[in-house]
Amino acid sequence: MKRIGFLTSGGDCQSLNATMRGVAKTLYQAYSDVEIYGILEGYKGLIYGNYRLMEPKDFSGILTEGGTIIGTSRQPFKHMRTPDENGLDKVEAMKKNYRKWKLDCLVILGGNGTHKTANLLWEEGCNVVTLPKTIDNDIWGTDITFGFQSAVNIATNAIDCIHTTAASHGRVFIVEVMGHKVGWLTLHAGIAGGADIILLPEIPYDINSVVKALDKRTKEGKRFSILAVAEGAISKEDAALSKKELKAKKKNNPFPSISYQVGQEIQERTGQEVRITVPGHTQRGGEPSPYDRVISSRLGSAAARLIIEGKYGNMVGFRNNEIVPVPLEKVAGKLKMVDPNAAIIQEAKGLGICFGD
Ligand code: F6P
Image 1 (cartoon, rainbow, N blue to C red):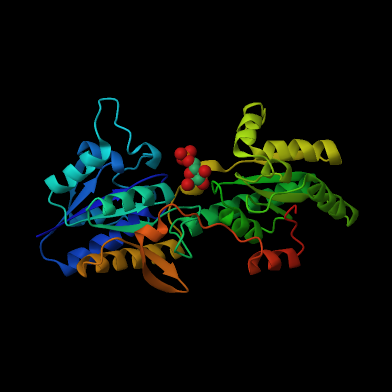
Image 2 (image 1 turned 60 degrees about the horizontal axis):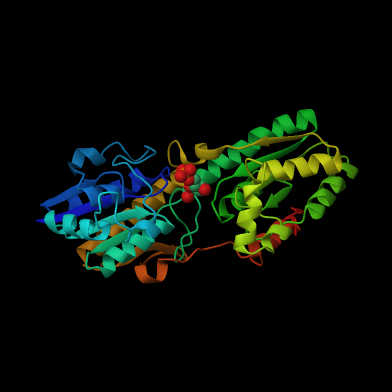
């Protein structure tokens, strides 16, 4: 008898169910006696002992279903070693439930924070295999995370829709794209949507360069401009501040997000009418794209293979078109950022896209 615990943690994305289906189907094919414990609401379920015994039928019909059938929650890694309000040691509680349920392995689907806790559990003696989930595509050790392409589709669609109205009105439009501290989603959606200006956290912007690019377009007779702005975009001025100084500055910042600040500056400096669109969590919702369904099924199947072969302590990564195991200790605590000198940036610049640098 094999007993495997499934756990989805952190912000959701479109392809979590497709990935779990990939793992489950492969396990059911390989073993005649496998029990899957659906650990509810991420690490919370592992801490407090909440699970649902899954059946093969639970994994049918979910390939196209967004969200996660076992729920998720954010349990910040930095608080994992802090006892809960009743004094419960969370790490000990997780280990206890792992042993109580006689699990052979935990399959953990999550992003950066999730991977830190997964690595901790592995170091504490639990067998763990992880899968790289996030629309942000910022997990170290894999070229692609599942959820990313689906989110690119949605953010691109938002820019596409803005295009027609921007053209009619002759305005400047800003579309603010998710991605936390990295710019992958904005970069890809920005290029795919034909944005004129793309602002990323990895390339701090100078508002003068942005204004210059807008003026150039006006002189060329272009009636509208579209900016794809990452939620984590930052000005050169702010990027030069220390963490403490930036925190203090943000306290007095009247803008709900960076796009509103950029928008006001553009309006004041150019006199052009500016509108802002924030697609927000729609970028994480709905069904997975066909690309994500394929990559999720492949990664899921490969994760099951690692379990079958007893190769624990790994994330299933996708590098140079190959699925590879990546040791958890290498993944945990690192962020995969956009390289400002990468070919894709140079090519985008070649197309005339301004990055505000
Ligand atoms: O990590 C995925 C993500 O959607 C980020 O792009 C975004 O910054 C964050 O999660 C939003 O988190 P929450 O859903 O907790 O508001």
